[in-house]
Length: 360
Image 1 (spheres, helix red, strand yellow):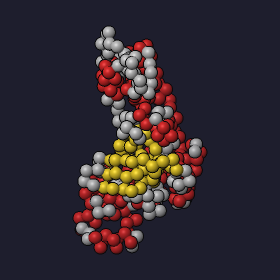
Image 2 (tube, rainbow, N blue to C red):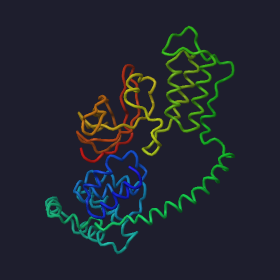
Image 3 (cartoon, helix red, strand yellow):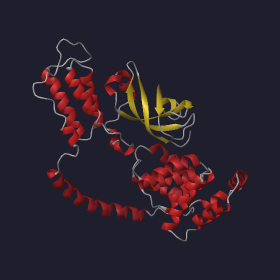
Image 4 (cartoon, rainbow, N blue to C red):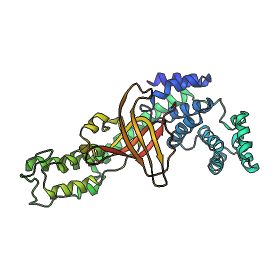
């Protein structure tokens, strides 16, 4: 979807055709993962169509990108209130009042919290449609002219800033000095010629692979660097070189959703499942469905059914474990960021982040 498609979604939103907005935008989550306007449009459309679960997920992402938008804050506060999360609702409405002291929705919400609602009262409040009183006004605007003007201005400023950055980068020391500090002592043997492993390298090849991995780390291509180091770890490299490879591998940073720029270093299920050992420690961003969910005080575990929303494409079933709290239910269709953990035969994913995709 190009800029014209996003502008079309804005027009549909203004005409209160929220289901159409969702239909157009929902398949584009990957493409517009850094667009505040995209997530705001999609989140508010879900909210107005009474999909509070999808609304919260998208509005939370919009808030992560811009934390001062009144409409987004009001939507999040109303959802917290509907789920009895009164402390979160209170804090969010107070934030709205800081930004807009006369905001009527925030005032109404704070009054309701002061009164206190029993569970039955809250259920009746929601079922009667009064929760809509706390939503951001349906007249939320997305002025196209203002947005395009801002884009042009930012582009002009950006060119100047880019020139300055390029000049500064030429004199800037490496951003990751810990990588440069990993130096193999002179005289170290790089390979064990008698060892038989997945890969057989010469002394020169092993040294070049190690140095190439360091270069990739300095370019923030941690996934590719990790693969290179795994090639050494599962090769005839000497024990010393393997230890240095493991040390260097430990510096791989845990990414967020926004770090997968253009997904250039995101690996597919087929390549990871075929040679799992090569991708141990790499991070992948995949879509699929939650199944066989098991929640204990120690962890959340489930089977991740890698594939499409409509189940027409199914690639495989992967065990996943999360060691921090997050909201999961069976049949959730999610975008999952996870770390590949090789177990000697196959692999599992250690969950890092998940984003529920509206509709399942």
